[in-house]
Length: 373
Image (cartoon, rainbow, N blue to C red):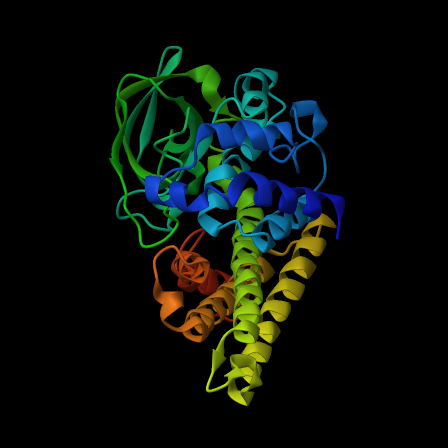
């Protein structure tokens, strides 16, 4: 076990597990948890020291996630606590000292919360067709439009927002940081969901919101490329969520099957139960091995866009099957609200949708792999 994995596991056991069900019921993670995670150095993993991070690469962030999920963190908790993982990378790589000082450093220090707003009502995964506009007016952009299903949207102090500053298509898209309190920027609706209960999700609105030009991330028209460059990391992160909660569900179920007795013997004494556990184990290990290999290739500089799509699908399918079997083998207990396997079962359903749906990513992989007419 790596040091960062153990650090994440210990933090989860101490700071997360005793409170997680309350946060699930409250519908949000407290800001104090961000500060505590920052103090332990967790938020800065994967970010360079030059921008306030702890250093490390994608493999280190995977170690951290694996440790936390194995110790009892939920996928929703990870999404809420580490939303900066999708909100900050675009800002951190620009080399813009002002953006780094105003947004990156405070967030990695646990003082502020950032979010990323790309998806729009009716737009789904078609990023190139987004309609939220940002029209230049002197030293400001005037932003109009709406965003949907935004993770940490109701708690965020700022939102890295995909906007259209140019013409149709991907070439007209830019990234703009919109700060909480900007007149015309509103949280229109906090969404209730099947799973990810402790991860607040919101619809956002922009009505003549005036945003300083200084909040532009990179050059105008480069937003789509910036978003696309981070898609591999986001999809692999969700894949880790998937096999992570599957592995945790397997561990809980194996323990339950050893302890639970029926007809005078433990459940695990039944061949059908043992074979089910082995199949669950196989799926977890296949997903974990493949996802980590794709991540290793990404860190090595290879182009793994198609492979990341397949890795996410492989892990999500594992989570779907394993969490379902976990509930089944727990019996009635597994169906009770507040039971950990029940939580993982609900959370697993979001993963084939978030970060690009399985159907969209499969079609993307088909094009990249040459399986087209």
